[in-house]
Amino acid sequence: MMEVREHGLYIAGKSVPAASKETAEVLDPATNRPMARVAEGTRDDVNAAVEAARVAYESPEWRELDPSKRGRLLWLLGQQVRDHFDDLSRLESQNVGKPLREAKGDIAYVYKLFEYYAGLADKIQGDTIPVPGSRFDYTLRDPLGVTAHIAPWNYPLLLASRGVAPALAAGNAVVLKPATLTPLTALKLGELAGAAGFPSGIVNVVTGPGRDVGGALAAHPDVDSVTFTGSTDTGKQLLHAVADRVVPTTLELGGKNPQIVLPDARLDRAVKGALWGAFQNAGQMCWAGSKLLVHESIAPSFLAKLKEQTERLRLGPPLKDDVQIGPLVSRDHAANVIRAIEDGIEKGSKLLAGGGRIDSADLKDGNFVRPTLFEDPPAGARVAREEVFGPVVAAWHFDDLDDAIARANDTPYGLAAGVWTQDVAKAHAIARRLQAGMVSINEFPVTFPQTPFLGWKQSGLGQEQGVDAVLFYTHVKNVLVNLE
Image (cartoon, rainbow, N blue to C red; front, top):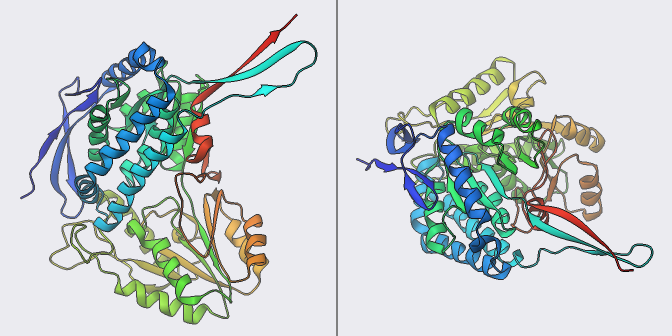
């Protein structure tokens, strides 16, 4: 039986219980048995964490630290992640339910994030601006102060670190609120920050329900920015919470992401891209390629290959060596995905593969859903228009490229899109017409710490990753000097 460990909040460099002394169980999604008990924070704990962050931010130890030494701390935190790579990977795998090989890729990305932003810490600079007369004008970039980070459950440590790393590089103090379902690696990150040498209070982690902890963070008068990754509906609610205070806000929200496959695409490569673009992390990805548009001349062979490979995917406990797809993160989420699949069937979609829960004796207690492939679902079906956030992909044929692009853009979202073709000129032309923040050609999905991660339309506000992510966590100050 798995050991059920107790975890406190991480505030001011120490693990502490919640002010209420309440705890909540964290369940293993493969079995729905408890794997940990975590402190259940409240508004009081948010207040304590923000106060600790403010004190640490204002201290000379942090405010006067040479930026290159701040970068060194980020680098050392990346090394701490490297040193604990196996433990973090296993913990992430078990907590989310994703296969261990995927979790290892996530944790590798985490230390690359800290290494990348370590190199930028002493390169945050202003400009000199020509102005009329005997004057000298220049800009400075100062840290915002205390930054709040509300992370999702699908990539818990990766998506938390994606905001925390640039915020620290810019000289801020942070309060991280991980998802209630998957808080374990975020709590470990707080401990690793202390081990790397960050001053107490610069990195704080408060666990607890989103409506209490996340809401209190977003509305806190001493929080200087909010970074949120999650559903579009929750993102809209958060905007209301920050509107009265008018603080900088980054939102990375949902997506219904198209992949367009042209007749000259390398078929096997495109099938593999469609498969993992849809089913990686059991489809629990904001940028999952769940909307597949295939030219009618290759659609029969393409979908036959995709159906065959979908049916061959191996489901099971995430730490098992040969598993390719694990369970969904919770019972409730699995039930919602099943309802979307049933809606697709009821509304007349052609079911090519999957279509329900796993009923084998060894997996029946977990949140396992068969990878599901639909062909030509009607516009009214949930799988055709909604972000299902599970192992479900819907495919349509097209014969006119303009029609395919119009269909790809016919969504309130605009996060990611994929194009499969060997015609480079056509690929670039299509990329310009797609209404998405990120377009991948002959590979999907893919990103790097140095490349922007952003959405158009209702997929978000602002930008994660790259140099501009650091700039978000700074104020610009213009200084004009009259030299006469």
